[in-house]
Length: 158
Image (cartoon, rainbow, N blue to C red; front, side, top):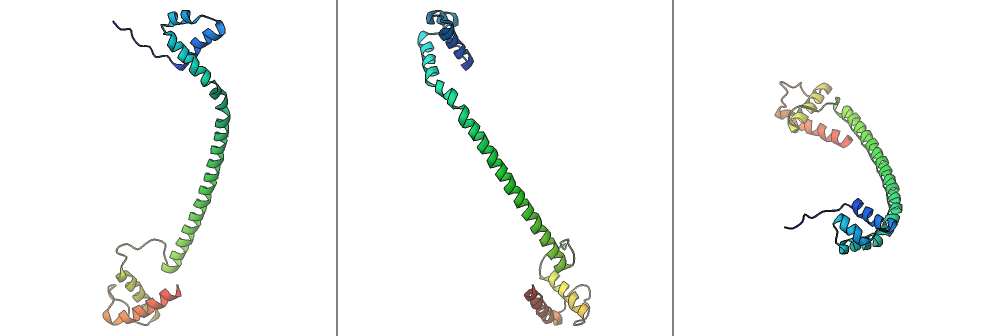
């Protein structure tokens, strides 16, 4: 009947190697106590000595990497804050221009087609006395030429 396979954690492996190297316990005794094959023990020892330099060298680049990441995060946060300020200023200017052009800040309800613009222009013409006041909000055929002339003048001034 085959024996159960045991997986050793890195801490367990280091503890076994430490007992051999520091306490001078023979490999045969360690292998008998922990049910290891000697070849496995020597493979762990080889890996330990080959990768030992990495344990000392890993600390320095990580510190530099963390500092670099912090600087990068700070730069990106400053850039984002500047962008948010610019967007806020642009939106404020846009709202002011909209109020000046339309006389109100909220968008009109409904379609955004020519009929609404024509009605607004017709009201403007009626206020200046050039055409009769609109009836029911509809623009008559006889006023279209005057409306389009006024519209061209308004678009040219903007």
